[in-house]
Structures are given as structure tokens and as C-alpha cells.
Image 1 (tube, chains in turn orange, blue):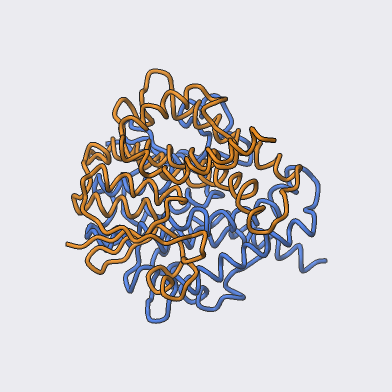
Image 2 (cartoon, each protein chain N blue to C red; image 1 turned 120 degrees about the horizontal axis):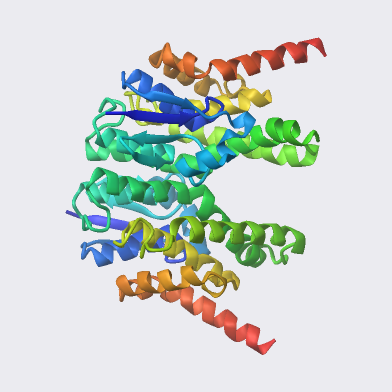
Length: 228
Length: 228
């Protein structure tokens, strides 16, 4: 059995799968694709993933993209613990419900804020238009409000109940992204903060390992801001 | 066994599930939620779906939102044919890969074009800003180009190979949406057109039944345009 994971820890779903494979004690070959060097745009990588994105897996020659599809495939191969992606049809459906909801209602707004405020200015050298950025910030905050009020409901420790699942891991990785753009969701959303701490602890030490580069960027920015 | 489907045939994923349940000869109680009358915003409906969207199912008291999660749940209950959502892990992963990809890369752009060009002017009485609309049209066309070149590849009859699956049904329902805004993807994208015809025929007569209201709107608009 050979399993390769093409990833960059700058990418939220790459981090989710990296941490998931590590916590599952799954033997895999990490294949780092440096997004900041544009390695995903190379002809060589296009042969692996025609969409030129990460993450991708290659499992004995079967190449698959899309993190949620990959997670489901790995579960079907019994490579991840059923506790994290339950086999019971109703319990699994609740995890799926979050994972499907999260694409447009959550991930999109968190990653767009990161892109417009942090990435685009690095690439173009042009600072974001304040009015445009305000719109992205409003949508970011609205997504966080919905996440906190609808998914982290009183009485439940985790997204789908009192057991931690991949839904929590995927959500947590997405939440890290705006931190690189100077916005820490935990500061304004206290229930997100306490849930997030539990998720980090549950997936320790792999959660920190998956976020080591991200945390370096966050700390570097904090130091720069404090000098201003 | 009681299965209720809360739906409006104006909604793409509602149509996908409606047609899927019909073609699966699944006995269900259709519960029409009139989006144009804002019935999804009622307190009564909020008790069923806290996100106040359609589609939703209620299966013996188990209430679930998100069309892709619903499809998977129904498959787990053996309520839809395995041919449409295969049990084989690798074949299913290819269907999942499309369903996960389609949220942000496909559905978002097709539905936003429909919303900005057709729905928002009806609600607000204000015609769309031409420059704004041009941006949405560019993203719509780019999504259609990617769909045709990457998913409808030469040699394959359907999205994941030579067998039709729910991936084709979900994609076809999304493609219908911009038609209501006066844009027919089949006119510019010929491979989409021929594939689409096959999908419609395969799910006949339920495909047309699911699109009867949509087709009425499209025809009414054509008549109005021809009078101008």
C-alpha cells in the first residue's frame, strides 16, 4: 500500500487531511507542493491534478482531489478511525450536513477575507480597497456568527454532538486562515474560542504540527504590528 | 416509513432530490415551501430547518438539510439505486469528487448570475448594474468552460465515466438556473448540450416534471423578449 498526500500547510483542507492522516497513524508519503512558489501551476503537477490545487491523494495509483471526497474515500478504505467519521448512517449524515454546508456558507467567506486582505496585496503590491475589504469583513463576521449560533449550540461540546469528528477538524482549519490576515475569530466569538481550544487539544500534537508555518506567519505579523 | 421532502422546484438542489426520489420510485410526501412567497422565512419552517432553506427531508422524524448530505443518507438507507450512487469505493469517490467540487466552482457562479440578473431586480425593482453583471457573466462562462473541458471529457458519456450518476443530475439541475436569466449554456457549449440531452432523457419523464415551472418562466420570458 502506498499513499501519497500532495499538500501545502498554507491550504486549510491540506492541513485538515495532514492532521487527520497523522492522528489516524496512517502511513503516508508527504509530497509538499509549494503554493507560494507556484509549484501547483507546473506542467508536472497538472498531470497529477488537472485543477492544479491541493490537497490530492494518490492511493496505489488512484488519484483523487477534493478534501471531503478524499476523507470519505479514506474512510471507505478503513484508513481513518470510525469515531472521527462514524459509520452509523444518521450520525454520519450530521457530519456530512456540516461538511456540505461549510463550502459556501463558511469556507468561502473566511478564505476570501484572507485572500483579499493578505494574499492579493502580496501578489499585486496594491493594498486592498477599504470599502471592498469592509464588505468581505462583514461577510466573514456573519459566517462566524452563523457558525457559532447554529453549529456550536449550547449543550453540545462539538459540532455534531458530544463526540469530536472530522467536522470539527475541518472547521478549525478554516478558522485559522483569517488569523494570517490579522483577524482572530476567538477574540470576538467566545464560544468558538472554547470549542477551538478543545479541538486543538484533541488533535495534539498533530494540530500544532499542521499549523507550525501558519503560526510563524501570525507571530511575525504581530511583531511587525507592535513595531508600528 | 414516512419520508417528507420540503422543496420548491425553483431551487436547483430541490429539483435534483425531487427527480431522484421519483426515479427511485421512493414513496415520499412532497411538502411545497413557496420561496417566492417567503414561506421559508416563517417561524413554522424555521422549526424544521434553522437555516430556512430548501431542500430538507424528514425521515421518520430525522430532519436533515444539505442536498448532498441528504443524497448520501438516502443511499445509506437503500432508498436510491446503487447505479446512481455506486457502492464501490473508488467509483463513489469519483462521484463525490464532482459533488464536492461543484459547490464553489460551479453552483456558486451559475446561481449568482441568476440571482443578480433575474431575482434581485424582481425583489428590488432596480435593474442590475451592467459592469457588475458583466463580472458575474464572466465567472459564469469560466465555470461552464471548466465544467465542459474538465468534467465532460472526450470519450466519456457522463461526468464520471460511461454510466450516469447523481453527479450528472445535480449538474444538470444547476445548469437550468441561468436559463431563467436568459442564458442557455447549451447554445455556446455544444458538448454540454449533447450531454445535457442524454441526462434529460435518462431521467424522463421526471426531469421534465421537476422543471415544469422553470420551463414556463423561460418560455414566458422568450415571448416577452420577442415582443420587444
